[in-house]
Image (cartoon, rainbow, N blue to C red; front, side, top):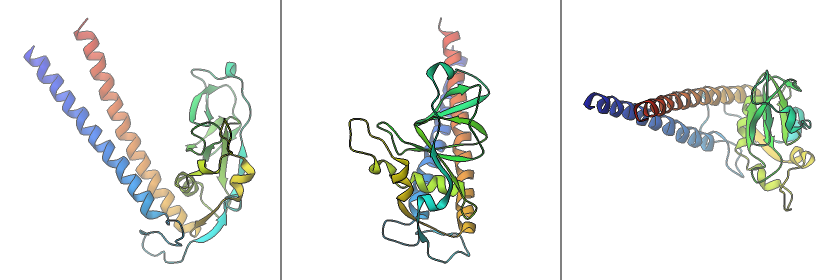
Length: 222
């Protein structure tokens, strides 16, 4: 019993360690998002990569995008527990489908419900429902940067005042923001993409360790 107790104690310590690393990375990302995007009324952020000095320019969201539109309807029966193509709705992953309607890297804005205005991303072949607005940057801008910019903009405030909050694509396309040159956008987008990958890595390690602990407890205490 002592050996089991010692093993479980070490496992708990490992879980705590990864939880702390994950929490620190999440806090660090939040802090960097606040510092690497200009505050309201300002034309430059607090922190910039070396070599970039030009002020950010004001643009409408629609002017930054080659695609800015809602996805398509899909019935509940067509959304599966597993399948070749992920299905994304207004709040992220909903399941899987046998068909896809988009291919590539996209920012997704939830357009209905209490969480309207939240931003997710999708890459590769996927199906976007009518509750998600698919956004892809045009050739002058960077989609990865745009995804993080949208996430900082509190888009939910532009929802219609009704019992079921919703965002109109036409309204969103007219929302103004500030953006840097494409080169600086790419540098920012790449930085946050690497940070997101690191956060996901620690999240998966944490989930794996928690599942191992649960499995062991289930087998030890029948």
